[in-house]
Amino acid sequence: KAGVTQTPRYLIKTRGQQVTLSCSPISGHRSVSWYQQTPGQGLQFLFEYFSETQRNKGNFPGRFSGRQFSNSRSEMNVSTLELGDSALYLCASSQTSGGEQFFGPGTRLTVL
Amino acid sequence: DAKTTQPNSMESNEEEPVHLPCNHSTISGTDYIHWYRQLPSQGPEYVIHGLTSNVNNRMASLAIAEDRKSSTLILHRATLRDAAVYYCISGNAGNNRKLIWGLGTSLAVNP
Image (cartoon, rainbow over all chains, first blue to last red):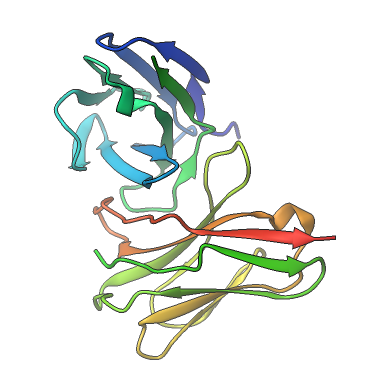
């Protein structure tokens, strides 16, 4: 069974731009969660989607948004990028909300 | 969700057991204890989780203190591949994804 895939793997943007990251969960998994990982803060939860509905949301500004499609694939969007948004963005899927999470390799976003 | 405290780093020798401690003194009765690890340039991977009783799987063992305020992840025979950052997380295993991950313990394994 294929693992969680994330595209693109690396991305360079400039301040003020917007970006969309994509995540394909493991087949059969209906829950997708997004995390931001930075050296000083560790992993911070962004949001979780289950069956196309946002189930949980972390403490991030409204510039961070996401959605989930009927095939469980998920996208995350960040508008008006700031330098502090530079991070590794991780996606994790699970069969159910709250189940064991399987992480993708992440998308490394650099904002210049 | 309970905050966890782990040592920043630990070192072990190959083929020796490793005991990774975690304090979660504010844990509530329904919070599970999860352990994940992150190998270099990879996303985190699940290791083990438990609620009250000690747990074993093919990767590791989890020893949970009787008062549940601390736990220990045990790698029975460390290999070079076990060098990673180990995260101890405490939280509700239900719908709540607001798990506080912290910075984890960086484990170095010496050949």
